[in-house]
Image (cartoon, rainbow, N blue to C red; front, side):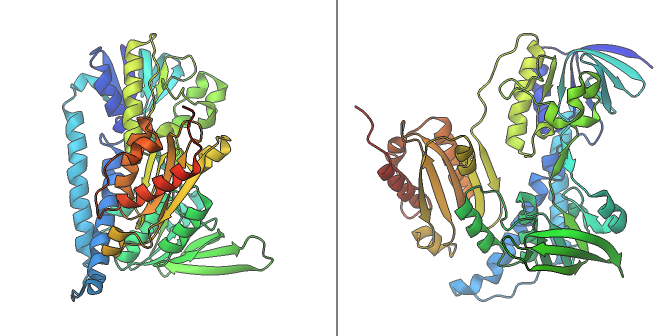
Length: 471
């Protein structure tokens, strides 16, 4: 048992924690990082990187299987073991880089263990008591798992934390959850020869909020999947080492209901993530902090109420976005190191991407966010069914929508369902963060033939809906 005092204690060594540490050590060397799990990042180990490795393999499989459309004849054979071996090899390469960053930190800056708050400036780590002037919570989130499913299915129940450890691609998979993680992995597995059944609570999938685009996305992305929508899970169990799932399907507005069952080698639970915020003893400071909803930080400073505590990363949000976690960690690190002097920082413009095919992306404010805030906006849509470059690529499907402000003519947001939306979404997010108007964007060069020409068409249509600006 020992006692120590620090200027700043950072709880968690993932993306947000590492970003915070980089800022804190610019001001003080009297810092401690307490970490209960691996000293790498969710992104590298179980998130962004391994999932994109699997998706990239699926992309090559899909291209090979459809090469005949370009007059190229070949025979595609998918090696179930080799696919996972590459995923795991490069996953380990990326986690090694994340680990190497932490390995360079002085040993006295690191402590393995789980931290609990005694009060706002006192923590307990094992038998040790730690005093701090300020602390940063960056403990992240974990996949949500139904305890009954876990008990019934044991190793046959997978999450995004465990699926990439499989020695080979399975023959079949039930994916429960049709959000970003569910649809990315379901589509990739299906394109790699896995028989996939996708279960969804509602009748739309993925990461778009505009009703028309959501319907289109659902139609396009479920062509390769056995998609069971409007479903609720009644029971799961193992039978002859196979997962058996009983479900109930209830269609909105219809009296007829349907019950059925699905069988597969594994079940992948993609039903969201849970914050670790309520495991840190914050309720010892204030009873309001018993749940994550009671402990929300200021979005421009990352500070929790007026306490010397800052929160960063997906511990405080349902979206696990690496770039947002890094930026939040940077802000939290600066303010914790200078506490009690705190300054607000402008947040990033919203940017989210689902790496399906076609990709789904949102830049700036979504249709739903604008509608809920009663923000006046004009909307323009362009279909990519006949877009030139998309047709050349044989990826002429989907659409994009732009949202503009009638008063200022500034671009407010965009939702995209097109091939390589990740690139268009970045251009649009940068433009929105710079406060560019529709006219300024239309004054930019657009090469031919490129996917961006569809964006130009949407900008022209959006401009036609906006009133003339007063001189």
